[in-house]
Amino acid sequence: MRPLRRGEIWTIGTAPAPHTVLVISSTVYNEIPSEPTVLVAMVVEQATDEGFCVDLGQGQWAVMGLVTFVAKANLTQCRRRVDVQTLTNVNNMLFKILATPER
Image 1 (spheres, helix red, strand yellow):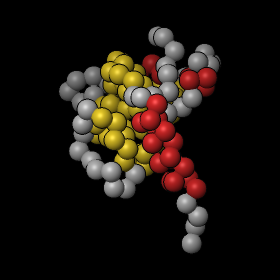
Image 2: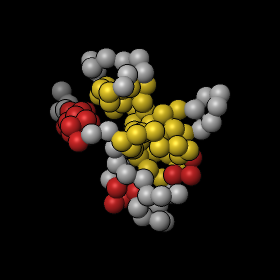
Image 3: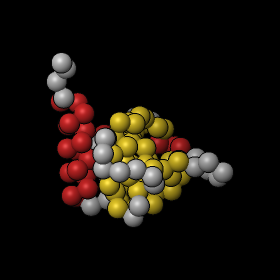
Image 4: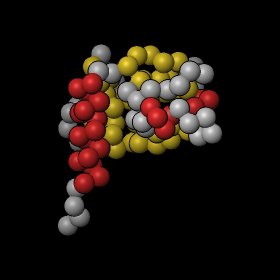
């Protein structure tokens, strides 16, 4: 498998229930051969920009509140790569989630 790049949208699993994810771990981390996982955010088609979702274009949304890890071996097909502005929006949303102070 080729090295995974931050900002790529991948399919995991196979029919009848494949899932789509956005790779959010750094490309440098993803290239570590001994590291079997990558960090991802779930991608959905029904969402809005309210809450923790980021518009990825083409009717897809990254749900930044649903960050998890998956095995690199489970990623089956790279669908596309998002642009730099979209990755900036992803970064900003992660910052909002992680930097929001407790009350």
